[in-house]
Amino acid sequence: MISEKSTSAVRFEYEVKSSYSTDTKKAMLDADEIDGLLKSIKVMKDKIFPSTSDVYSEVTYRSRGGFEAGCYWSKGKWTTYLKLEKYDSKSYVFLGQEDFTTLYDLLVQAQTKL
Image (tube, rainbow, N blue to C red; front, side, top):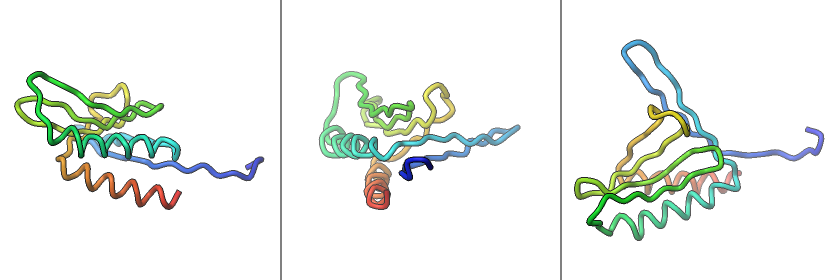
């Protein structure tokens, strides 16, 4: 308010339901982190997903706040995921590879509005 500047971010939310309660996992990406995430998703889509591996492999983007977007090779395929909170194993969101394309498109739209 003092400098009259605004700060923008992209926010991710995921609702985790258990038999006893519901919890909302959240992550924020600053506007300056979106480019890195977009580049990482593009590399995964264009170079990693078409490839195969003989051993377990991981490719991960990690933000300053601990948000992760990545994929790993296991059981003959690439599995994609988001992890919203750094120290919370219940904050994983598993996606299909086509969902990464949708995420990429949504992030491009969001970036133009920031």
